[in-house]
Length: 96
Image 1 (cartoon, rainbow, N blue to C red):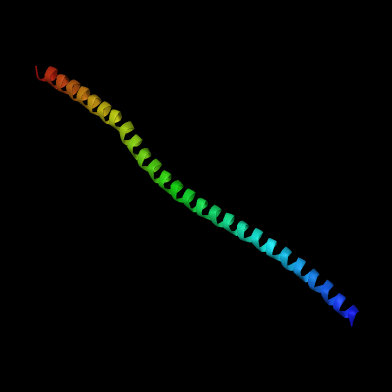
Image 2 (tube, rainbow, N blue to C red):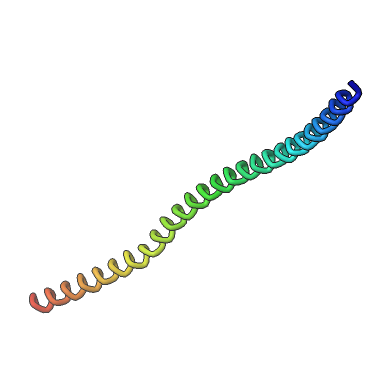
């Protein structure tokens, strides 16, 4: 019987060590899970910031295009005025 008690004691000691090892592994997994969760939250925030940045860039591109078009419109108006003046002068010369 004594041998059986010693075997039981040894088996119990091994199980306790295994339980301690499993508890350490669970603690490590909990820390890893928390890290992954924090990373997921960070990625979500970055995605939202990227979407906002894309919207701002699109708005700025529209503004830049408007600014680019203004000188062209002024130039077209100036050319039209010169052509009108030349045509008017030509007609005035023909009438005289």
